[in-house]
Image (cartoon, rainbow, N blue to C red):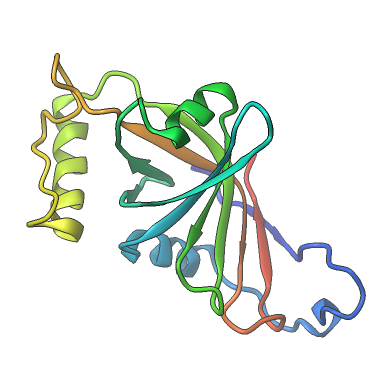
Length: 166
């Protein structure tokens, strides 16, 4: 994944963005995404109704990987509209990822092992998928979300930073 372009988000007057003096680094933001245990995923239904759901997942190679049933509301929404927003739990030190969520295609043995190791590191014993959890007839509904835009800060508005991906 190429390094993102870095700038400031556009904010209305009075939000203090004109006082911003620092930029966050992409590696520091990506580290937060990698280390987080809980994420919030927001989708929109065909009729425009918003839906937000907590998700477990792993950030690997510049994307968020998570699984779940194709019968869930958020997956049904994503089948209609892949645009979504992923947010970490902390609202004071926010990390907001705008992107597209897609069904993952064939999962190789090597990729399945990487996913399995990372899921087990974060969630075992509650969730410990094996390397073959996303392949074959018993495959889970693996999805990936790749960022188009990320907004993050740790000291609003001093280090509020926007990362744009091509």
